Length: 423
Image (tube, one colour):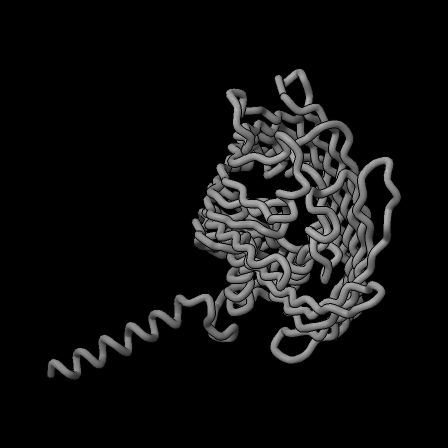
């Protein structure tokens, strides 16, 4: 008797769940007889959805309501907006046969990830590690914290801690934030030999409040942003003496633009441009007076299994600045195959570099790739020497790469291994 009651209750529960499920077959749901008059998003901005998903929402207008399809559609909206829940609701339309479908977005996930982390290794420079933990609420980045040891980006190896906080307001059009770091420096013997008095420092503390403004935002990543703020740095010099603490305070501004067009099947174009300007000025009581400009451009064309990319980097530095503001090449990203200590052990104040790379997709998201790098690193008043390198290897579209790179020079062919990943 008890068993019969249990089985009966179980079957009633199963059929009840199916009756009230959004994934029930369309013919079993009485709501499928209604025609969709409109599809609306409540609790979030529709423009934050991708263009393809917005077009799919509009494609359901004028068609019979499908609980199963709208259940799947709600899951896609939840994933793109990183919401905790997207609840589909039916609202009476302008006529008895029509309904308005409202996708009610409830809250957002708080996610902890390491997507900004990076590892790299250069056979002539050693390893670089940057472990960053980010706490997000939807598209709103709340907090970052990390530990790093970077032998790739600057003249020296810089190791230490960093943290940041940023929030969005006015529909993600304004993003105030701060970042701070503290690090110690280690130098290669070639840098130590080339350095002059007060060139090198033992440690640096940095504090940088900024605000990002978004004057324009279009479809699928089409966006223009301006980031402005102040960078306050305190250096402890290596040289002995009572005045070992110096300040490098600068106004910093970066203009960024990106645009994405098309899809992979017919041809996808990605354009990313940026221009950065840093001014070390007496108005901020800086011990260094300088003007640093840097321009970057990236063009990527992807169609089917093939990807072609072109990168441009140009920089100029005038005045007296800390060596960490000087430009480097011969790293895992610029003039691959060369060594930055061979090109300029103290960095330089002029840089022009390009990179052209072609990749062809294999199975499981990997690509065979080949590249040609070209560029020059020099100081103002001296003659620029153009250097080239070629290489080939394996990469993936989620950030892994492994290349064998060859600097093109007379007399000998010496290979370098460059590898890394973002995760």
